[in-house]
Amino acid sequence: MKDINRRDFLKLAGAGALAVGAAACGGGKKTDTKVEAGIEGQMEYRTNPGNGDKVSLLGYGCMRWQMKKDENGKDIVDQESVNELVDRALEAGINYFDTSPAYLRGQSEKATGDALARHPRNSYYIATKLSNFGDRSAEASKQMYLDSFEQMQTDYFDYYLMHSIGRGGYEAFKKRYEDNGMMDFVLKEREAGRIRQLGFSFHGSQAEYDQMIALHDKYKWDFVQIEMNYMDWQHADGVRNVNAEYLYDSLDKRELPIVVMEPLLGGRLANVPENITYHMKKREPDLSVASWAFRFVGSYPRILTILSGMTYREHLEDNLKTFTGFKPLTEEEIEFLKDMAGIMATYPTVNCTHCNYCMPCPFGIDIPAIFAHYNKQVNEGTVAQSSEQANYKELRKNYLLSYNKAIPTLRQADHCIGCGSCLSHCPQSIDIPKELHRIDRYIEQLKQNKL
Image (tube, rainbow, N blue to C red; front, side):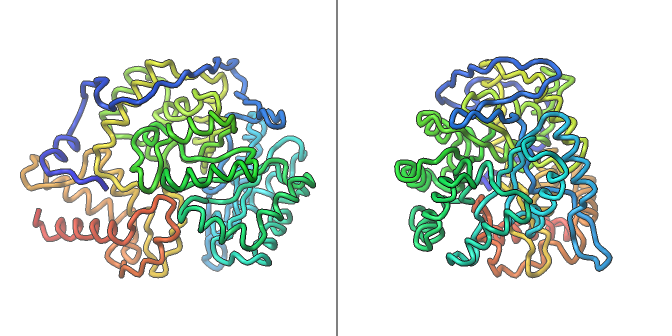
């Protein structure tokens, strides 16, 4: 979270319409976006130069399938919902489905595989990962790889990734994939055709990225998956994440296809502050706020596909409006989004993307929901910060009521004991206990009316 004084916060939290200037985002190199407008009514496709695959620019991220309770009260994937969404996606031309053994507490691969297996295998591309975060032994890692074939009901993977590398640099990569012989193993699997394209997904600092991409000389990566959106383009913190502009330029120079994750920054760019929404709607009244984020990413020609975790049908349908007859942004529109990003970078939100890697918390705390609620209040300008505010009493009451409604009492921030079990799982390297304790202190101040 960025430090900001109370006066500046109140200005931002209560902002309505604002003037936008080029100085808002600072410098940065312009990128020539030589992407032609798509054909109306048809899905946009990009050709993988490595093997000729024609991949839908909109890819399905299978990390956020809808869940439900089974007869024993356990959270399970709603398979009927998944089937319906997959059927609609394929019908509309989406052909790239990205999953992992780690997603949805191990349930994503099977749910995705069950839905896809009802369709011809040559009508879609499967992307999954070697997510050996826990037991990285050769035996356990190979078993994870083999289990993925069974879960996905396939005898080959179109795109296979070393999952979430970067944290800890080369030494961490070496322990997870080289010391146990897994890199030699997957290279042989690629030669045998059971892996058609081999790549990695990245989270980490610039120095760590430089170490990972240097391995291209040795392993000849076929593609790379990065976090890219108009906020992270020039406003990543530089410690936990790298500016996407740097990542994109590096991969573009190497002519490596790019798969994009977090184009909406965990949904935050679909729910931007009201003043930002005002300017987007003024320009494009009929388009959603999310469409701006997708069009930004898709306007760069090295992008192969953009993953979106579409939990509900309305998410899918809205995204289809963006990617059928795709309209890349103009240079002026790209600069407009960079200006918006510069303004949003001053908002004191928690950099949570709602990936749920931190869950389950051993003490039952709903970490992503707490952060999502807080970020939403900040973005909407409804955070009570001082009794000096004209509508302080109303804001205070509304925050406390909405917090209790959004997060059950036993799952709220005050139950965090700071055990730190969540820290190693966060791709954004958020100091989760620190942020939970800060939010809890704020809530206690509201309850005791001490602001």
